Length: 164
Image (cartoon, rainbow, N blue to C red):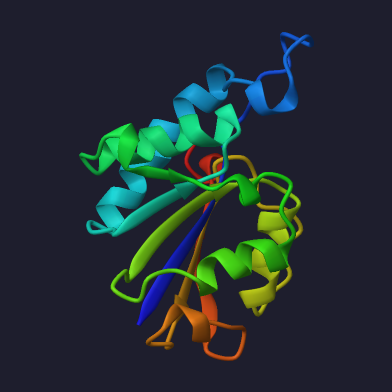
């Protein structure tokens, strides 16, 4: 069984309009939500095998809070450039290429892609995966290359406003 978590980056700041989109940091709400959601996931899923993040500052910073919650160093986060401005197919290609020794993987990225991915695996329409939202997909596939809509389903969906 394989489990993938799609985690949208926490709320980012638009304060400094001179920054490139990739460089935008988290805003105060994002700095509150990311560690909270990381601890929440750690309590529900105590063991993970890998963290993969978009190179965008807001996504990598979010991933860093999750790494910290799991006792991992930032250097253990795999930065995957293809996640930034990715299509659902781009992200699925990354997932389908994962090493089969991994069973539980966290992927940090962006909308609208993560909402589209959530809806690929959900029985009910999700209009939006909010910032720092966590979508858990569980698959009966034994190999990542076989993970698809037919053998996988959304089983949990958490986001900060459920708790604040």
